[in-house]
Image (cartoon, rainbow, N blue to C red; front, top):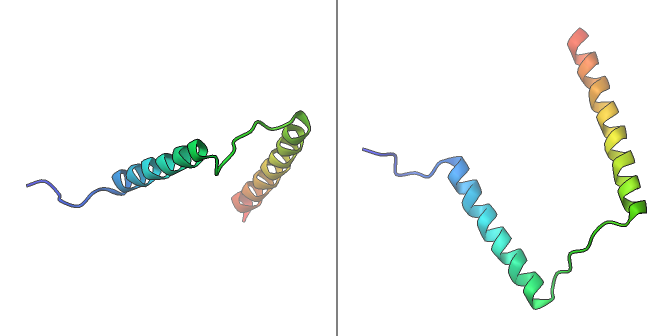
Length: 66
């Protein structure tokens, strides 16, 4: 007999599909606007990502020697 309960993956996929439908509906109704990042915003985002990656790497090294 198969397990009647959905897996966590199935639950997440269902939730994601519902969220995507809601976003698509909001865009179609004009309640949500999607735009591209400006070059300046992209630079700032990349700089934050690089700084966070460096911090993550430092934590990993400390944890390795502890």
